[in-house]
Image (tube, rainbow, N blue to C red; front, top):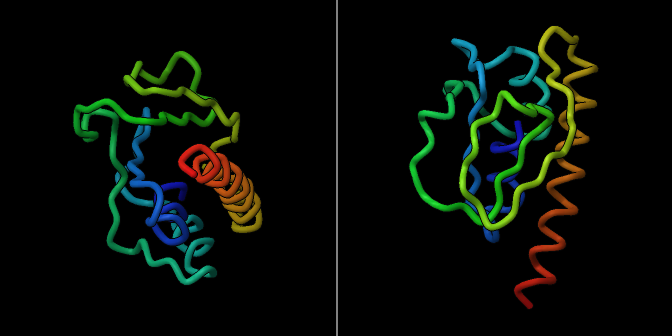
Amino acid sequence: MAEALSRKYYSDIIEPFSAGSKPAQEVNTFAKEALSDLGIDILNRKPKGFEDIEEKEFDYVITMGCKDICPFIPAKKQIDWQIEDPKGGNLIYFKEIRDKIRSNIDALTEDIRKEIT
């Protein structure tokens, strides 16, 4: 959800990539619905693992509570948002997590804009 939200609202300032430690075979139906409510279509997206991310140094690597499961990916800044994986939750829970992610992205991009101006 973080990549889709970032692409929708902040593609002018960030180029997001996402990956999971244990990617599913398909994107969760509730994730699709939660994003669809905001006009974001991820129907044809596939989950990616860390090995699917191109090798380069990122400005930011943001994890969401994966702790030791996440491999080290070089970045100028490492941030952990401690956001729960909504897997196993219902649509309402997915929307709550979506909104937490969006709030954190809002704050991050505000900070980035301050740094570059």
